[in-house]
Amino acid sequence: MTPVQLLGQWLASRLSGESAAWFDAGVARLRSGATDRDLFLLTSAVTRRLGMAPLGLQAADLEAAAASRAGWDPSDWTVDQAARVYLLLVSTPDGAETSRRLDRLCGAADIGELVAFHRGLPLYPDQPRHALRAAEGVRSNMRVVFEAVAHRNPYPSEQFAEQAWNQMVLKALFVGTRLDLVVGLDRRRNANLARMLCDYAHERWAASRPVSPELWRCVGPFAVGNVLDDFRRLLAGGDERERQAAALALLESPDAAGRRLIDGEPELAAAARDGRFTWDTLAESA
Amino acid sequence: MLFIDPHIHMSARTTDDYERMAAAGIVAVIEPAFWLGQPRTSVGTFVDYLSSLVGWERFRASQFGIRHYCTIGLNSKEANNEALAEQVMDILPLYLGKEGVVAVGEIGYDDQTEAEDKYYRAQLALARDLGMLVQVHTPHRDKKRGTTRSMDVALEMGMEPGRVIIDHNNEETVREVLDRGFWAAFTLYPQTKMGNERMVEIARRYGAHHIFIDSSADWGKSDPLAVPKTARLMLERGIPRADVEAICYRNALVAFGQGGRFKEEDWLEPQRRDERLLFEGNSVLRGQEPRVDELPVIPERDERLLIE
Image (cartoon, rainbow over all chains, first blue to last red):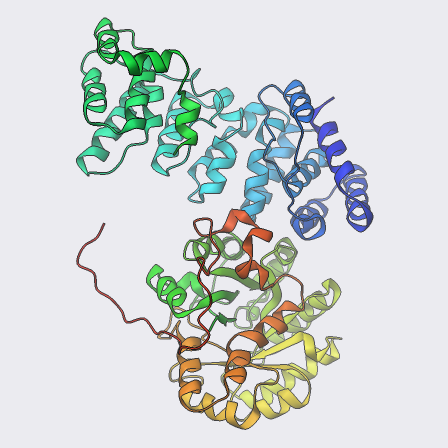
Protein backbone atom coordinates (compact mmCIF):
# COMPACT_ATOMS: atom_id res chain seq x y z
CA MET A 1 0.00 0.00 0.00
CA THR A 2 1.05 3.57 -0.60
CA PRO A 3 1.10 6.17 2.19
CA VAL A 4 -1.94 7.86 0.61
CA GLN A 5 -3.90 4.62 0.71
CA LEU A 6 -2.87 4.02 4.31
CA LEU A 7 -3.91 7.51 5.40
CA GLY A 8 -7.24 7.06 3.63
CA GLN A 9 -7.81 3.72 5.30
CA TRP A 10 -6.90 4.96 8.79
CA LEU A 11 -9.18 7.96 8.44
CA ALA A 12 -12.08 5.93 7.04
CA SER A 13 -12.00 3.62 10.05
CA ARG A 14 -11.98 6.55 12.49
CA LEU A 15 -14.60 8.86 11.01
CA SER A 16 -18.32 8.29 11.03
CA GLY A 17 -21.61 10.05 10.50
CA GLU A 18 -21.49 13.71 9.59
CA SER A 19 -17.74 14.05 9.77
CA ALA A 20 -17.21 11.09 7.43
CA ALA A 21 -19.77 12.45 4.96
CA TRP A 22 -18.16 15.90 5.02
CA PHE A 23 -14.70 14.44 4.51
CA ASP A 24 -15.73 12.06 1.70
CA ALA A 25 -17.52 14.86 -0.15
CA GLY A 26 -14.43 17.04 0.18
CA VAL A 27 -12.13 14.32 -1.12
CA ALA A 28 -14.46 13.70 -4.07
CA ARG A 29 -14.44 17.41 -4.89
CA LEU A 30 -10.64 17.52 -4.79
CA ARG A 31 -10.34 14.42 -6.97
CA SER A 32 -12.62 15.87 -9.62
CA GLY A 33 -10.38 18.90 -10.17
CA ALA A 34 -9.46 20.88 -7.10
CA THR A 35 -9.27 24.63 -7.01
CA ASP A 36 -6.99 26.34 -4.47
CA ARG A 37 -10.08 27.71 -2.76
CA ASP A 38 -11.57 24.22 -2.27
CA LEU A 39 -8.35 22.99 -0.76
CA PHE A 40 -7.93 26.01 1.55
CA LEU A 41 -11.47 25.86 2.88
CA LEU A 42 -11.32 22.09 3.41
CA THR A 43 -7.94 22.00 5.13
CA SER A 44 -8.74 24.90 7.44
CA ALA A 45 -12.06 23.38 8.53
CA VAL A 46 -10.53 19.99 9.38
CA THR A 47 -10.04 20.54 13.13
CA ARG A 48 -13.61 21.71 13.62
CA ARG A 49 -15.13 19.00 11.43
CA LEU A 50 -13.00 16.02 12.41
CA GLY A 51 -11.53 16.90 15.80
CA MET A 52 -7.94 16.51 16.95
CA ALA A 53 -7.90 13.05 18.51
CA PRO A 54 -4.72 10.98 18.27
CA LEU A 55 -4.76 8.49 15.40
CA GLY A 56 -3.65 5.86 17.92
CA LEU A 57 -1.92 3.62 15.40
CA GLN A 58 -1.10 0.03 16.35
CA ALA A 59 2.23 -1.71 15.81
CA ALA A 60 0.94 -3.32 12.60
CA ASP A 61 -0.10 0.10 11.24
CA LEU A 62 3.32 1.51 12.00
CA GLU A 63 4.98 -1.42 10.24
CA ALA A 64 2.76 -0.80 7.22
CA ALA A 65 3.72 2.87 7.33
CA ALA A 66 7.44 2.11 7.36
CA ALA A 67 6.96 -0.44 4.57
CA SER A 68 5.13 2.10 2.41
CA ARG A 69 7.72 4.79 2.94
CA ALA A 70 11.04 4.00 4.63
CA GLY A 71 11.52 5.90 7.87
CA TRP A 72 7.97 7.26 8.04
CA ASP A 73 6.85 7.24 11.69
CA PRO A 74 3.30 8.54 12.20
CA SER A 75 3.08 7.15 15.75
CA ASP A 76 2.06 10.49 17.26
CA TRP A 77 -0.02 11.83 14.36
CA THR A 78 -3.53 13.06 15.06
CA VAL A 79 -6.68 12.76 12.96
CA ASP A 80 -6.52 16.39 11.81
CA GLN A 81 -2.89 16.05 10.75
CA ALA A 82 -3.57 12.89 8.77
CA ALA A 83 -6.60 14.48 7.14
CA ARG A 84 -4.79 17.67 6.14
CA VAL A 85 -1.88 15.81 4.59
CA TYR A 86 -4.27 13.42 2.87
CA LEU A 87 -6.32 16.28 1.38
CA LEU A 88 -3.19 17.89 -0.02
CA LEU A 89 -1.95 14.58 -1.43
CA VAL A 90 -5.22 13.74 -3.20
CA SER A 91 -5.52 17.27 -4.59
CA THR A 92 -2.58 16.70 -6.95
CA PRO A 93 0.02 14.02 -7.78
CA ASP A 94 2.41 16.63 -9.18
CA GLY A 95 5.48 17.73 -7.23
CA ALA A 96 5.60 21.29 -8.52
CA GLU A 97 1.90 21.82 -7.91
CA THR A 98 2.20 20.33 -4.42
CA SER A 99 5.04 22.71 -3.67
CA ARG A 100 3.08 25.73 -4.91
CA ARG A 101 0.04 24.76 -2.84
CA LEU A 102 2.19 24.10 0.22
CA ASP A 103 3.64 27.58 -0.04
CA ARG A 104 0.19 29.13 -0.09
CA LEU A 105 -1.16 26.88 2.66
CA CYS A 106 1.82 27.51 4.92
CA GLY A 107 1.78 31.23 4.12
CA ALA A 108 -1.63 31.55 5.78
CA ALA A 109 -1.45 28.66 8.22
CA ASP A 110 -2.27 28.47 11.89
CA ILE A 111 0.00 26.48 14.17
CA GLY A 112 -1.89 23.21 13.83
CA GLU A 113 -1.76 23.44 10.05
CA LEU A 114 1.96 24.21 10.05
CA VAL A 115 2.62 21.14 12.18
CA ALA A 116 0.51 18.93 9.91
CA PHE A 117 2.01 20.10 6.63
CA HIS A 118 5.57 19.78 7.93
CA ARG A 119 4.91 16.32 9.30
CA GLY A 120 3.73 15.39 5.82
CA LEU A 121 7.09 16.25 4.22
CA PRO A 122 8.27 12.65 3.66
CA LEU A 123 5.09 11.89 1.70
CA TYR A 124 5.04 14.62 -0.93
CA PRO A 125 5.84 13.82 -4.57
CA ASP A 126 9.23 14.87 -5.95
CA GLN A 127 10.98 14.85 -2.57
CA PRO A 128 14.02 17.10 -3.24
CA ARG A 129 11.69 19.91 -4.31
CA HIS A 130 10.50 20.52 -0.74
CA ALA A 131 13.86 21.12 0.95
CA LEU A 132 13.27 24.87 1.22
CA ARG A 133 9.89 24.30 2.84
CA ALA A 134 11.53 21.95 5.35
CA ALA A 135 14.26 24.49 6.07
CA GLU A 136 11.57 27.11 6.64
CA GLY A 137 9.99 24.82 9.25
CA VAL A 138 13.35 24.42 10.98
CA ARG A 139 13.66 28.21 11.05
CA SER A 140 10.33 28.60 12.87
CA ASN A 141 10.28 30.18 16.29
CA MET A 142 7.38 27.95 17.20
CA ARG A 143 8.89 24.89 18.77
CA VAL A 144 6.10 22.54 17.72
CA VAL A 145 6.66 23.50 14.08
CA PHE A 146 10.39 22.94 14.40
CA GLU A 147 9.72 19.54 15.95
CA ALA A 148 7.34 18.62 13.13
CA VAL A 149 10.39 18.63 10.85
CA ALA A 150 13.07 17.52 13.29
CA HIS A 151 11.31 14.66 15.10
CA ARG A 152 10.13 11.30 13.74
CA ASN A 153 10.60 12.65 10.24
CA PRO A 154 13.03 11.02 7.77
CA TYR A 155 12.97 14.01 5.43
CA PRO A 156 15.86 16.08 6.87
CA SER A 157 18.38 13.25 7.03
CA GLU A 158 17.60 12.36 3.41
CA GLN A 159 17.42 15.82 1.85
CA PHE A 160 19.36 18.32 3.95
CA ALA A 161 22.88 19.23 2.92
CA GLU A 162 25.40 19.13 5.75
CA GLN A 163 25.08 22.77 6.70
CA ALA A 164 21.27 22.66 7.01
CA TRP A 165 21.44 19.37 8.86
CA ASN A 166 23.98 20.69 11.36
CA GLN A 167 21.90 23.79 11.98
CA MET A 168 18.87 21.64 12.72
CA VAL A 169 20.71 19.52 15.29
CA LEU A 170 22.23 22.56 16.95
CA LYS A 171 18.86 24.28 17.05
CA ALA A 172 17.24 21.22 18.62
CA LEU A 173 19.68 21.57 21.53
CA PHE A 174 19.27 25.32 21.58
CA VAL A 175 15.50 25.15 22.01
CA GLY A 176 15.83 22.35 24.55
CA THR A 177 14.20 19.54 22.64
CA ARG A 178 15.19 15.87 22.39
CA LEU A 179 17.73 14.49 19.95
CA ASP A 180 16.77 10.83 20.18
CA LEU A 181 13.66 11.50 18.07
CA VAL A 182 15.73 12.91 15.21
CA VAL A 183 15.67 10.31 12.42
CA GLY A 184 19.11 9.45 11.04
CA LEU A 185 20.97 11.27 13.80
CA ASP A 186 23.84 8.77 14.08
CA ARG A 187 24.18 8.25 10.34
CA ARG A 188 24.54 11.99 9.67
CA ARG A 189 27.10 12.78 12.37
CA ASN A 190 30.08 14.71 10.97
CA ALA A 191 33.24 16.47 12.08
CA ASN A 192 31.87 19.97 11.55
CA LEU A 193 28.82 19.20 13.64
CA ALA A 194 30.99 17.80 16.43
CA ARG A 195 33.07 20.98 16.43
CA MET A 196 29.96 23.19 16.48
CA LEU A 197 28.51 21.22 19.37
CA CYS A 198 31.71 21.40 21.43
CA ASP A 199 31.85 25.14 20.88
CA TYR A 200 28.24 25.38 21.96
CA ALA A 201 28.93 23.34 25.11
CA HIS A 202 31.86 25.64 26.01
CA GLU A 203 29.66 28.67 25.51
CA ARG A 204 27.03 27.22 27.83
CA TRP A 205 29.59 26.28 30.46
CA ALA A 206 31.08 29.76 30.34
CA ALA A 207 27.63 31.16 31.10
CA SER A 208 27.04 28.60 33.88
CA ARG A 209 24.18 27.07 31.95
CA PRO A 210 23.40 23.36 31.74
CA VAL A 211 24.40 21.32 28.67
CA SER A 212 22.13 18.53 27.44
CA PRO A 213 23.90 15.17 27.80
CA GLU A 214 22.49 14.20 24.40
CA LEU A 215 24.87 16.67 22.78
CA TRP A 216 27.78 14.26 23.24
CA ARG A 217 26.09 11.60 21.11
CA CYS A 218 27.21 13.46 18.00
CA VAL A 219 30.71 14.08 19.35
CA GLY A 220 31.77 10.51 20.23
CA PRO A 221 33.18 9.42 16.83
CA PHE A 222 35.20 12.66 16.71
CA ALA A 223 36.42 12.52 20.31
CA VAL A 224 40.15 12.82 19.71
CA GLY A 225 42.94 15.02 21.07
CA ASN A 226 41.78 18.13 22.85
CA VAL A 227 38.13 17.15 22.61
CA LEU A 228 38.88 14.53 25.23
CA ASP A 229 39.30 17.33 27.78
CA ASP A 230 35.57 17.89 27.62
CA PHE A 231 35.00 14.26 28.52
CA ARG A 232 37.52 14.44 31.35
CA ARG A 233 35.50 17.33 32.70
CA LEU A 234 32.22 15.40 32.37
CA LEU A 235 33.59 12.27 34.04
CA ALA A 236 35.16 14.21 36.90
CA GLY A 237 32.51 16.83 37.62
CA GLY A 238 29.34 15.88 35.78
CA ASP A 239 26.10 14.59 37.22
CA GLU A 240 24.98 11.01 36.69
CA ARG A 241 23.45 11.63 33.25
CA GLU A 242 26.48 13.56 32.07
CA ARG A 243 28.81 10.78 33.16
CA GLN A 244 26.64 8.26 31.34
CA ALA A 245 26.72 10.41 28.21
CA ALA A 246 30.50 10.67 28.43
CA ALA A 247 30.78 6.89 28.72
CA LEU A 248 28.51 6.22 25.74
CA ALA A 249 30.38 8.77 23.61
CA LEU A 250 33.83 7.51 24.57
CA LEU A 251 32.92 3.97 23.53
CA GLU A 252 32.93 5.38 20.00
CA SER A 253 36.14 7.40 20.33
CA PRO A 254 38.69 6.50 17.65
CA ASP A 255 41.47 7.76 19.92
CA ALA A 256 43.35 5.27 22.12
CA ALA A 257 43.50 7.98 24.80
CA GLY A 258 39.70 8.09 24.72
CA ARG A 259 39.47 4.39 25.36
CA ARG A 260 41.96 4.67 28.23
CA LEU A 261 39.79 7.41 29.70
CA ILE A 262 36.71 5.20 29.78
CA ASP A 263 38.72 2.24 31.07
CA GLY A 264 39.54 4.40 34.08
CA GLU A 265 35.86 4.14 35.05
CA PRO A 266 35.35 0.34 34.95
CA GLU A 267 31.86 0.27 36.48
CA LEU A 268 30.48 3.00 34.26
CA ALA A 269 32.12 1.47 31.20
CA ALA A 270 30.62 -1.95 31.94
CA ALA A 271 27.14 -0.50 32.40
CA ALA A 272 27.44 1.36 29.10
CA ARG A 273 28.67 -1.73 27.26
CA ASP A 274 25.87 -3.85 28.74
CA GLY A 275 23.22 -1.40 27.64
CA ARG A 276 22.11 -0.62 31.22
CA PHE A 277 21.77 2.93 29.93
CA THR A 278 21.58 4.08 26.32
CA TRP A 279 21.13 7.35 24.45
CA ASP A 280 17.41 6.63 24.48
CA THR A 281 17.18 6.16 28.24
CA LEU A 282 19.23 9.31 28.69
CA ALA A 283 16.82 11.29 26.51
CA GLU A 284 13.79 9.89 28.28
CA SER A 285 15.14 10.69 31.75
CA ALA A 286 15.45 14.41 30.92
CA MET B 1 -11.98 36.39 39.22
CA LEU B 2 -11.15 35.48 35.62
CA PHE B 3 -11.28 38.00 32.79
CA ILE B 4 -11.65 38.06 29.04
CA ASP B 5 -10.51 41.03 26.99
CA PRO B 6 -12.63 40.56 23.86
CA HIS B 7 -11.01 43.40 21.93
CA ILE B 8 -7.27 44.02 22.16
CA HIS B 9 -4.57 44.39 19.50
CA MET B 10 -1.86 42.26 21.05
CA SER B 11 0.42 42.44 17.99
CA ALA B 12 1.14 46.01 19.08
CA ARG B 13 1.87 45.08 22.71
CA THR B 14 4.92 43.87 24.57
CA THR B 15 5.70 40.71 26.53
CA ASP B 16 5.53 42.89 29.65
CA ASP B 17 1.88 43.45 28.90
CA TYR B 18 1.24 39.75 28.46
CA GLU B 19 2.84 39.03 31.84
CA ARG B 20 0.86 41.71 33.65
CA MET B 21 -2.38 40.66 31.96
CA ALA B 22 -1.91 37.04 32.98
CA ALA B 23 -1.05 38.10 36.53
CA ALA B 24 -4.23 40.19 36.69
CA GLY B 25 -6.38 37.20 35.72
CA ILE B 26 -6.94 37.64 31.97
CA VAL B 27 -7.29 34.15 30.51
CA ALA B 28 -8.41 34.84 26.94
CA VAL B 29 -8.19 37.66 24.42
CA ILE B 30 -9.77 38.37 21.06
CA GLU B 31 -7.69 40.38 18.60
CA PRO B 32 -9.76 42.00 15.86
CA ALA B 33 -8.13 42.60 12.51
CA PHE B 34 -7.75 46.35 12.18
CA TRP B 35 -5.43 48.83 10.52
CA LEU B 36 -1.87 49.44 11.64
CA GLY B 37 -1.97 53.18 12.21
CA GLN B 38 -1.18 53.97 8.61
CA PRO B 39 -2.76 52.57 5.46
CA ARG B 40 -1.30 49.43 3.89
CA THR B 41 -0.32 49.68 0.26
CA SER B 42 -0.58 46.10 -0.96
CA VAL B 43 -2.54 42.93 -0.37
CA GLY B 44 0.66 41.12 0.59
CA THR B 45 0.91 43.02 3.85
CA PHE B 46 -2.69 42.07 4.63
CA VAL B 47 -1.83 38.42 4.03
CA ASP B 48 1.12 38.62 6.42
CA TYR B 49 -0.89 40.49 9.04
CA LEU B 50 -3.84 38.11 8.98
CA SER B 51 -1.48 35.13 8.99
CA SER B 52 0.23 36.46 12.09
CA LEU B 53 -3.15 36.77 13.84
CA VAL B 54 -3.93 33.08 13.31
CA GLY B 55 -0.31 31.94 13.70
CA TRP B 56 2.47 33.71 15.53
CA GLU B 57 0.48 35.97 17.84
CA ARG B 58 -1.67 33.04 18.95
CA PHE B 59 1.47 31.12 19.79
CA ARG B 60 3.08 34.12 21.50
CA ALA B 61 0.06 34.55 23.78
CA SER B 62 0.13 30.87 24.70
CA GLN B 63 3.65 31.31 26.04
CA PHE B 64 2.19 33.55 28.73
CA GLY B 65 -0.74 31.29 29.53
CA ILE B 66 -3.26 33.40 27.64
CA ARG B 67 -5.52 31.95 24.94
CA HIS B 68 -5.63 34.09 21.83
CA TYR B 69 -8.47 34.33 19.32
CA CYS B 70 -9.10 36.79 16.54
CA THR B 71 -11.70 38.23 14.25
CA ILE B 72 -10.91 38.58 10.56
CA GLY B 73 -12.12 41.28 8.20
CA LEU B 74 -11.42 44.37 6.17
CA ASN B 75 -11.52 47.40 8.47
CA SER B 76 -13.54 50.47 7.59
CA LYS B 77 -10.61 52.87 7.14
CA GLU B 78 -8.86 50.74 4.54
CA ALA B 79 -12.14 49.89 2.80
CA ASN B 80 -11.74 53.32 1.23
CA ASN B 81 -8.92 52.10 -1.02
CA GLU B 82 -11.22 50.18 -3.34
CA ALA B 83 -8.59 48.63 -5.59
CA LEU B 84 -6.92 47.13 -2.53
CA ALA B 85 -10.21 46.33 -0.80
CA GLU B 86 -11.24 44.07 -3.68
CA GLN B 87 -8.07 42.04 -3.31
CA VAL B 88 -8.50 41.80 0.46
CA MET B 89 -12.05 40.48 0.01
CA ASP B 90 -10.57 37.70 -2.14
CA ILE B 91 -8.20 36.50 0.58
CA LEU B 92 -10.65 36.59 3.52
CA PRO B 93 -11.96 33.04 2.81
CA LEU B 94 -8.42 31.78 3.40
CA TYR B 95 -8.76 32.78 7.04
CA LEU B 96 -12.41 32.71 8.07
CA GLY B 97 -12.49 28.92 8.52
CA LYS B 98 -9.57 28.70 10.90
CA GLU B 99 -10.04 27.49 14.44
CA GLY B 100 -9.03 30.66 16.29
CA VAL B 101 -11.25 32.91 14.18
CA VAL B 102 -14.37 33.68 16.23
CA ALA B 103 -16.13 36.30 14.07
CA VAL B 104 -15.92 38.55 11.04
CA GLY B 105 -14.52 41.83 12.39
CA GLU B 106 -13.89 44.48 13.18
CA ILE B 107 -15.94 45.91 10.36
CA GLY B 108 -18.30 48.87 10.02
CA TYR B 109 -18.03 52.58 9.37
CA ASP B 110 -15.35 55.20 9.92
CA ASP B 111 -16.19 58.26 7.79
CA GLN B 112 -19.39 56.54 6.59
CA THR B 113 -18.40 56.73 2.92
CA GLU B 114 -19.93 54.77 0.05
CA ALA B 115 -16.93 52.48 -0.16
CA GLU B 116 -17.15 51.71 3.56
CA ASP B 117 -20.83 50.89 3.12
CA LYS B 118 -20.11 48.60 0.16
CA TYR B 119 -17.52 46.48 2.00
CA TYR B 120 -19.42 46.47 5.29
CA ARG B 121 -22.37 44.98 3.42
CA ALA B 122 -20.23 42.50 1.49
CA GLN B 123 -18.70 41.22 4.73
CA LEU B 124 -22.06 40.99 6.48
CA ALA B 125 -23.20 38.80 3.57
CA LEU B 126 -20.07 36.67 3.93
CA ALA B 127 -20.70 36.22 7.67
CA ARG B 128 -24.35 35.38 7.07
CA ASP B 129 -23.48 32.79 4.40
CA LEU B 130 -20.75 31.16 6.52
CA GLY B 131 -22.90 31.21 9.67
CA MET B 132 -20.41 33.46 11.49
CA LEU B 133 -20.76 36.19 14.12
CA VAL B 134 -19.94 39.82 13.39
CA GLN B 135 -17.98 42.32 15.49
CA VAL B 136 -18.83 45.90 14.54
CA HIS B 137 -16.55 48.91 15.02
CA THR B 138 -18.70 52.02 15.44
CA PRO B 139 -17.29 55.35 14.24
CA HIS B 140 -15.64 57.94 16.50
CA ARG B 141 -17.28 60.80 14.65
CA ASP B 142 -21.04 61.10 14.19
CA LYS B 143 -21.21 58.13 16.51
CA LYS B 144 -24.90 58.00 17.33
CA ARG B 145 -26.06 58.08 13.74
CA GLY B 146 -23.26 55.72 12.66
CA THR B 147 -24.23 53.20 15.31
CA THR B 148 -27.89 53.25 14.30
CA ARG B 149 -26.91 52.83 10.68
CA SER B 150 -24.55 49.93 11.52
CA MET B 151 -27.45 48.07 13.09
CA ASP B 152 -29.93 48.93 10.32
CA VAL B 153 -27.59 47.58 7.66
CA ALA B 154 -26.75 44.43 9.66
CA LEU B 155 -30.45 43.58 9.87
CA GLU B 156 -30.97 44.48 6.24
CA MET B 157 -28.24 42.01 5.25
CA GLY B 158 -29.96 39.24 7.15
CA MET B 159 -27.94 39.07 10.39
CA GLU B 160 -29.75 38.24 13.62
CA PRO B 161 -29.11 41.00 16.21
CA GLY B 162 -28.03 38.46 18.84
CA ARG B 163 -25.17 37.39 16.55
CA VAL B 164 -23.77 40.90 16.16
CA ILE B 165 -21.51 42.63 18.71
CA ILE B 166 -21.67 46.42 18.53
CA ASP B 167 -18.43 47.80 19.97
CA HIS B 168 -17.22 51.19 21.27
CA ASN B 169 -20.58 52.18 22.80
CA ASN B 170 -21.16 55.13 25.10
CA GLU B 171 -23.98 56.66 27.14
CA GLU B 172 -25.62 57.92 23.96
CA THR B 173 -25.77 54.65 22.05
CA VAL B 174 -26.28 51.93 24.64
CA ARG B 175 -30.06 52.17 25.04
CA GLU B 176 -30.87 51.60 21.39
CA VAL B 177 -28.32 48.78 21.00
CA LEU B 178 -29.81 46.87 23.92
CA ASP B 179 -33.41 47.60 22.93
CA ARG B 180 -32.82 46.15 19.48
CA GLY B 181 -31.30 42.94 20.87
CA PHE B 182 -27.63 43.44 19.83
CA TRP B 183 -24.67 42.95 22.18
CA ALA B 184 -23.26 46.21 23.59
CA ALA B 185 -19.50 46.28 24.11
CA PHE B 186 -17.74 49.24 25.77
CA THR B 187 -14.14 50.18 25.19
CA LEU B 188 -12.20 51.58 28.14
CA TYR B 189 -9.64 53.70 26.35
CA PRO B 190 -8.11 56.86 27.76
CA GLN B 191 -9.34 60.14 26.32
CA THR B 192 -11.05 59.05 23.09
CA LYS B 193 -13.54 56.43 24.26
CA MET B 194 -14.94 55.49 27.70
CA GLY B 195 -13.39 56.12 31.10
CA ASN B 196 -14.01 53.52 33.78
CA GLU B 197 -15.84 55.73 36.25
CA ARG B 198 -18.42 56.37 33.54
CA MET B 199 -18.55 52.62 32.97
CA VAL B 200 -19.40 52.02 36.62
CA GLU B 201 -22.39 54.32 36.25
CA ILE B 202 -23.53 52.53 33.08
CA ALA B 203 -23.37 49.21 34.91
CA ARG B 204 -25.37 50.72 37.77
CA ARG B 205 -28.00 52.01 35.40
CA TYR B 206 -28.28 49.22 32.79
CA GLY B 207 -27.21 46.15 34.75
CA ALA B 208 -25.31 43.35 33.04
CA HIS B 209 -27.66 42.06 30.36
CA HIS B 210 -25.89 41.91 26.94
CA ILE B 211 -23.15 44.28 28.15
CA PHE B 212 -19.41 43.63 28.27
CA ILE B 213 -16.18 45.62 28.24
CA ASP B 214 -12.82 45.58 26.48
CA SER B 215 -9.62 47.61 26.33
CA SER B 216 -9.04 47.94 22.56
CA ALA B 217 -5.43 48.46 23.62
CA ASP B 218 -3.26 48.93 20.55
CA TRP B 219 -0.29 51.00 19.39
CA GLY B 220 -1.77 54.16 20.91
CA LYS B 221 -1.71 55.21 24.56
CA SER B 222 -4.05 52.64 25.97
CA ASP B 223 -4.30 50.16 28.84
CA PRO B 224 -4.15 46.38 28.46
CA LEU B 225 -5.33 46.03 32.07
CA ALA B 226 -8.49 48.05 31.44
CA VAL B 227 -10.81 45.09 32.03
CA PRO B 228 -9.45 43.95 35.43
CA LYS B 229 -8.97 47.55 36.57
CA THR B 230 -12.56 48.39 35.73
CA ALA B 231 -13.76 45.20 37.44
CA ARG B 232 -11.96 46.28 40.56
CA LEU B 233 -13.44 49.76 40.42
CA MET B 234 -16.94 48.33 39.93
CA LEU B 235 -16.55 46.05 42.94
CA GLU B 236 -15.19 48.88 45.08
CA ARG B 237 -18.14 51.04 44.10
CA GLY B 238 -20.80 48.50 44.95
CA ILE B 239 -21.73 46.89 41.64
CA PRO B 240 -22.93 43.35 42.48
CA ARG B 241 -20.28 40.71 42.04
CA ALA B 242 -22.44 38.66 39.65
CA ASP B 243 -22.86 41.69 37.38
CA VAL B 244 -19.12 42.40 37.38
CA GLU B 245 -18.40 38.80 36.49
CA ALA B 246 -20.93 38.96 33.63
CA ILE B 247 -19.60 42.26 32.27
CA CYS B 248 -15.93 41.33 32.51
CA TYR B 249 -16.03 37.66 31.55
CA ARG B 250 -19.26 35.73 31.10
CA ASN B 251 -21.09 37.87 28.54
CA ALA B 252 -18.15 38.01 26.14
CA LEU B 253 -17.93 34.24 26.45
CA VAL B 254 -21.63 33.79 25.70
CA ALA B 255 -21.64 36.31 22.83
CA PHE B 256 -18.54 35.04 21.01
CA GLY B 257 -19.19 31.46 22.13
CA GLN B 258 -22.21 31.27 19.84
CA GLY B 259 -19.91 30.54 16.92
CA GLY B 260 -18.64 27.36 18.58
CA ARG B 261 -14.96 28.34 18.40
CA PHE B 262 -14.64 30.22 21.72
CA LYS B 263 -15.05 27.79 24.61
CA GLU B 264 -14.29 28.05 28.31
CA GLU B 265 -12.76 24.57 28.28
CA ASP B 266 -9.99 25.94 26.03
CA TRP B 267 -8.45 27.68 29.04
CA LEU B 268 -9.97 25.78 31.99
CA GLU B 269 -9.40 22.26 30.67
CA PRO B 270 -6.99 22.67 27.78
CA GLN B 271 -5.93 19.03 27.88
CA ARG B 272 -9.30 18.20 26.37
CA ARG B 273 -8.68 20.53 23.48
CA ASP B 274 -5.27 21.12 22.10
CA GLU B 275 -2.13 20.18 23.93
CA ARG B 276 0.01 21.79 21.28
CA LEU B 277 -0.76 25.24 22.61
CA LEU B 278 -0.31 24.72 26.31
CA PHE B 279 1.82 26.93 28.45
CA GLU B 280 4.50 24.59 29.79
CA GLY B 281 1.94 21.82 29.69
CA ASN B 282 -0.40 23.52 32.16
CA SER B 283 -3.72 25.25 31.96
CA VAL B 284 -3.75 28.98 32.54
CA LEU B 285 -4.74 28.32 36.12
CA ARG B 286 -1.38 26.57 36.70
CA GLY B 287 -3.05 24.16 39.07
CA GLN B 288 -4.46 26.88 41.29
CA GLU B 289 -8.06 27.42 42.15
CA PRO B 290 -9.45 30.61 40.69
CA ARG B 291 -9.52 33.30 43.37
CA VAL B 292 -13.16 34.09 43.90
CA ASP B 293 -13.21 36.33 46.92
CA GLU B 294 -10.42 38.79 46.38
CA LEU B 295 -10.35 41.93 44.35
CA PRO B 296 -8.43 41.56 41.08
CA VAL B 297 -4.73 42.03 41.53
CA ILE B 298 -3.35 44.89 39.46
CA PRO B 299 0.35 44.13 39.22
CA GLU B 300 2.75 46.96 39.85
CA ARG B 301 5.42 47.42 37.23
CA ASP B 302 8.44 45.78 38.75
CA GLU B 303 11.90 46.82 37.76
CA ARG B 304 14.27 43.93 38.21
CA LEU B 305 17.96 44.55 38.37
CA LEU B 306 19.09 41.07 37.44
CA ILE B 307 18.47 39.75 33.97
CA GLU B 308 18.86 36.02 33.80
